[in-house]
Image 1: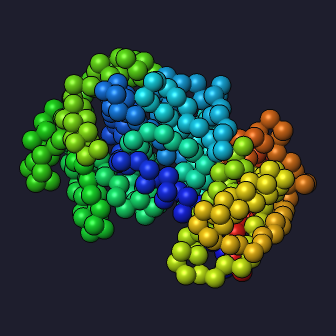
Image 2 (image 1 turned 180 degrees about the horizontal axis):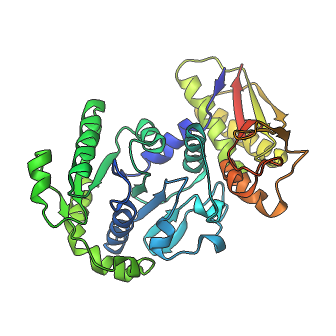
Image 3 (image 1 turned 90 degrees about the vertical axis):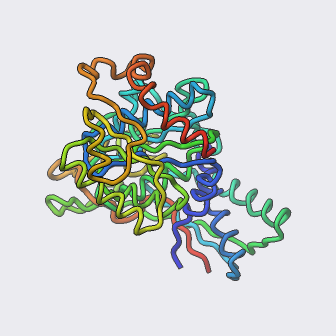
Length: 242
Length: 131
């Protein structure tokens, strides 16, 4: 009998968190990495020990938002690997520390294998794990939700019709699977009422389109300055669940 | 000592099987060549973890054996097949591949056509067989 020997240890490691929050969206380019990074910083600076995992294996970019040079960082090895401490209360792990910002073309089962490997060997010490996941109902997201059914998904959506339709599909999927969501962050939206109208639920946070936001990428203080206030409701919702 | 985490994962798996009522007599651990796990360190860690399991939880694994599997690859683009012996990963990238074997796709390519879209057909990393 062949076994995936990593699964029991992964479950144990994930259960050590008070909360696991995959940041997901059915579409690309709606701001998952931005929100995952800003929210992690917000929680960490509030004093909550926070772990952030970039699980977008074929295109990891969270380190860019955090202002880290993946080329020069290799996580420390100690009975596994230790996530990189970005700030006093913020730990971070990314496949980019190993792929060194080169292309990483992975087929589906390889993505799952890479996710399992990283989850099995990374020794977190935080209370909450925020996971920046790739777009769509990806192998990575499905595997994470399989491994930890208590995860609470934070859905990111823009307010255009295509994104709203896609978001509705994701909400329906989570409901059918009996999985829970923290809520929806409407990003780059000027009319958040569209969320209510189309999805029959209100957005937990509504972030406007910020002109020139790209210039802030890599500057953690500026990222937080731009998005922190807008994400307060998400922060308090998460803290209430801890 | 990354090997410790791999050994810990094996021990947790055995423990879970025993707790679920499975009679585990022998464990075979297959070390894939690509991940380049240090066999000595891994064996020492696994012995220590099994001993801890016996002492603290009363779970007694009679023995384990470690075998090795050669790494092999197949290009998804041109169909070429090769082994690690024939086309080694450069020394500077081996540590990264040791931690996450899939990142071999970032640092290695098909020796015939140069594509990174290849399959690891054997010898990726650690596998466990319970007897």
